[in-house]
Image (cartoon, rainbow, N blue to C red; front, side, top):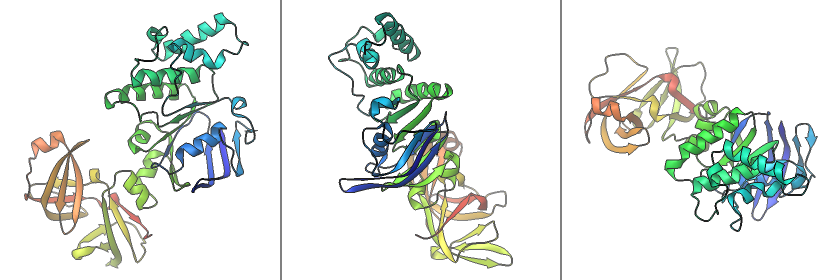
Length: 351
């Protein structure tokens, strides 16, 4: 288990402040944040490249706060891979165990084993000059894994990888996860967190602002920042009121949302995920909590198919699969209805 207790570090014009994280052994932990949020700086503190100004780091019951980087048995794979260009692939992988304490035959065997695991055996005798980014990524991982680290740190491992290779790298990382290796992976892309993480922390301006299982964090964000980061586009400032035992939220232009639950503040912000909204080009046949009539303003390609913008008093953004769009063709200025259940609406306090 990795435990960070009240970690703080002042850097040039920036501070990590009061970081507290518990990462159980075998967890794939993704630290999610924008550029400049403190992700890489926190990795460097864990690895031992820097020391905190205050706080403690514990790994498997041992206080490693003051330990040198070479004594922590923590593997760090840099964003730019940090491959040695004057060495072969085999030389790069063997570098960290070529200390004289392991004989040449054992070094070669360990290189072959880790290369086989990462499917780069055919590259061992080659120079690194003409390797693809995906191949360099595997070489960097092999060089780290050959030391059997207690903890693996990955700094933006997908950043230099072509989109066509990202699925291959994800499969590789899932295999490492299945081995029970504890992994901390920093990224700015929440989709990586959804596809890989067993736990996620969101960092902003040097502070952890939300932590938990990915589904919980992204379905129930604590503020607008986390909601926007996870792809939410539908935000509505509202006032809450109770009528005949039912809670409603009243937004701009008199738009009314019907809500479940027993208690709400006087005002706040509602968010609705795009995938929770259904669009109809005829009057919906079933009663739902919320049904609004509107006009299609824009249709754009998206990762999941098509993004449709509907004005129903305010603009609503919703995702439709390509298959659904073919079955239910729409065009600009089409009159439509949108529906969504009350339980899909998340309430945030005003900031």
